[in-house]
Image (tube, rainbow over the protein chains, first blue to last red):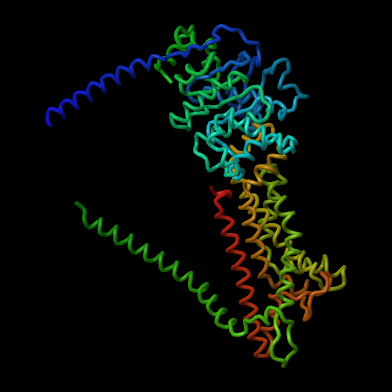
Length: 292
Length: 284
């Protein structure tokens, strides 16, 4: 009896050591290997000399960045470095903040999205966004949450709406979980489901670029894994820009990574290069956890 | 250790809790005694006939306040027609478009002042604006007077409740390429719907009990209301008339009228509460 217990203890001990070793390994950030490595995609969006202000405080300094089609681009950096502000410029959400200012230009394919003739509403239909905190419309049903983008853009045909709702929920890997309760309130879902509902909602309008502002930071690990798998899926059809605090996540999901600090773009390169052999000392320090 | 100090702290604590509890109890006395007294006095004459019959002439037993009940409901409807559209839209303007500008500041200030204006003053204004040009008392004039009183209440509650809709929901809607006006109509108002409805009901309950502005606008009438442009009875004015009359039967009926009015207001208040608690509403 006592022997048995001792045996068990030993086993536990061993497991612990193993775990620690394992964790030690994990800390060296693994970069996912992507099948279509090296394949050069065409340019989807391009930021040129982007500067942004909140009141008198400057948040972005001369950011130049090219976003390639059907790539996942990750933006990392410590809190307050301007990464959220940057992606909010990509669909002109920055200007909705009172007192905000913008300079520079951003192109979506060939069009400048800051062209005075360009309606921000049209930009946002092509460049969708998912926020840090899930923001389903609480009083609307799951169905209406997904359908509302189309509906408010004038779509009335029930059959088309049904189709789009199902397709979008499937794309967001939520269909199987909610197909029997489409009339339930969107606010009744769990946090992870709500976030996938928000992704489905964004996909329902015919968007080309999906901006994700720390989409997993309010979610548990399981939901996070689901969203990451989803990002891999969505990459087939969409261009994705994701802001994240989690460097492992950036390494896992992205093809390109940008590192920002104090409103400046410090380094921007292929994810593999960024995490194994960064050019800039600051990038290396941040990625290895020496600050930030 | 300083036990004296601790004992004193505890004693102070108990005393304060007791004082606050006692104050709360005293505050309840007027309300409870009022309801009980109205119930006791009014219950005697409360029957079906009271709710369905016209007032009987002096000396003739029986009769009711059916016309006054109908009149009050008519006045509430007319007041809502005046007060709700203006109040709700003004509230939405203040919350969504007029965060800081001077015009919004002026609107807020006037609403706050207006909701403090004695109701008899509102009555005089409605008399000058409506009764005089029309040359007679009417339900329309009464409805307008009550509607004036509703506007500031509805404006301010709507503003507060629309403001409570989280900014993130508006952002989410903009990010879907939904223009501002549609965001307000389809998302913000729908989210705040139950809250706004609560504010509306509370303001209706508030004006249902008004007497002063009706005395010289809708006045009174012993018969069924025929059209909104003639004098119309209301529970409040009828209660007032009967209560100051020298006849015992009328005085009893005044109590019953008061009871009916009380029940009406309580019912609206309860309805407002259930809307506010609705789990699909704003507060979830």
